[in-house]
Image (tube, rainbow, N blue to C red; front, side, top):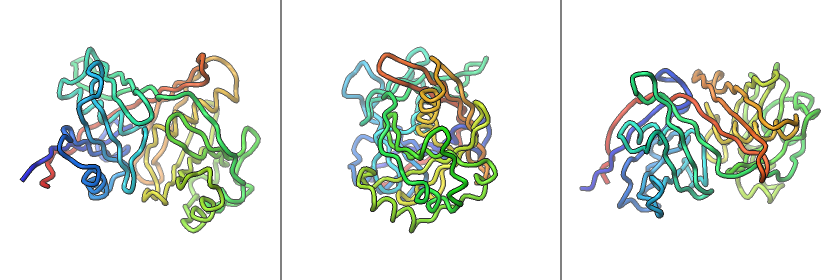
Length: 295
């Protein structure tokens, strides 16, 4: 019976039982697409990654990312966590890893402490900021279980945005953030009304105090009622805020997962580039479990 080793980590935290859980299958050769999807559903984390040999040997791995119901073109905490796992196995090159993914090439810088132990990683999102449709305030408020007046539109309306994977970014009044509760019927209704969402509706709510941000992310249509740390959405938000604020570069600290009892800290740096606004996102990563799947 073939066996496939995996490790789990908590990402965007410096201590166990915080941050976002991730399972990493460190050698996925021999697994079919259907088996990868089934394993991701079985692990029941926000995402699970599967490491394969790269198509281009100048890169370090081809990494496929699955959430509970589908494959992802790119995601934040899966890249940070996978990089940390592989670096602990000595598979980085001078502190750098390059992952081939559906959204493009992702470069990761591994972080180590003074003793050389891997503590975290910083990833560069594979694409520049792109903006899609704006969503109605009433519909977003219904999805989040808050009043329409709680959605803040002075800087921007709720908008579909991406650095490789699409999120709806919506600013919310700080007092309303903790009480937000996803309404799956409202999510289904809003998704049906907007074909541009292409069956995916991940809502990233944030409250801002300067460059300090508190956030929550709901994606119940994909099986994630709430996500404790969403690196790709945080990176996208940083790029959006810089585009609105002006300037060439900015740094943001994003706190997420507090309401879930899994506090997370994400460090985002965004910059104006020749092709638009780009971001990097990083944070800590803590090893948790090791095991194997018998298939």
